[in-house]
Length: 336
Image 1 (cartoon, rainbow, N blue to C red):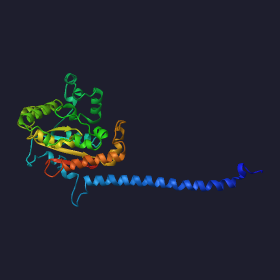
Image 2 (spheres, rainbow, N blue to C red):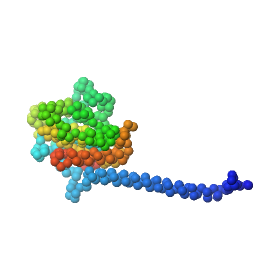
Image 3 (cartoon, rainbow, N blue to C red):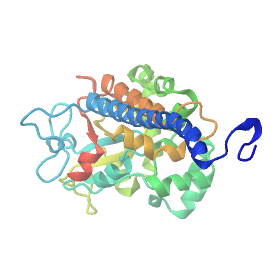
Image 4 (cartoon, helix red, strand yellow):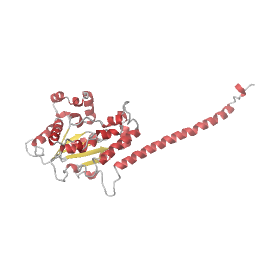
């Protein structure tokens, strides 16, 4: 019985090797299949995101020159140089929108210092310390001061925080809690503007008054002038146009409402988009445990596509908003 184990089986190393070899060979194909499946899934996800990107931003035809076709030679946005009738305007309201982490803050900063125009942008620095402490803007929608000021540090002051004419919106959070149906729930259209002229005028004046606190003295002086032109320190009319800039990501869903509410004041709308896969990866840190959607990259890509398709069929629909334009932040960053 020497050299035999239980049941008379040999323990010789060669015998063991022969018995283990088929087992290892059985596992090897399984590992290869799993790796191949993961690679295939990754390529399918990339293909879906590229297809979504091309649907929102189709390839330019030969001879077209986006992203520069929306800008004059000196870098001034062409849509900011004329009104709906292509006539020069001396004052207009410019709204920047797009999903969070899409580059809206970068575009806002560039517009705030655009050549050929004076621009009033929202900022708490336009208020004195006493005014800021008394007004306590973080209380308007029951936010903590810490959260309110952390948003300002990372993305500037968004107009949605400092007004109460519209309900507060956070598109990414709402999509995380309610899925893609949040897009429809957060949308405001021209039909949501009060039909009664007195009520509409009161809502418009209240909105501009609340934002006016944070637009700085230049903005307030231009409003007080009443003739649509900004004023110099000497009281004379400034030749260059004056724009009031407001940036909130949710403007991508409420642009028709803003245009109708502020009418007949001229408004311009700029929507910013980022590549869906890059955007989906950049927003991973904002996914909370209470989210029922937007938890995975594929879900966030679908959410991105839902917002972009809504933008295309509403704000960018032919004839809907004559002075609206969408840009890809990658192109803008390469050629600001």
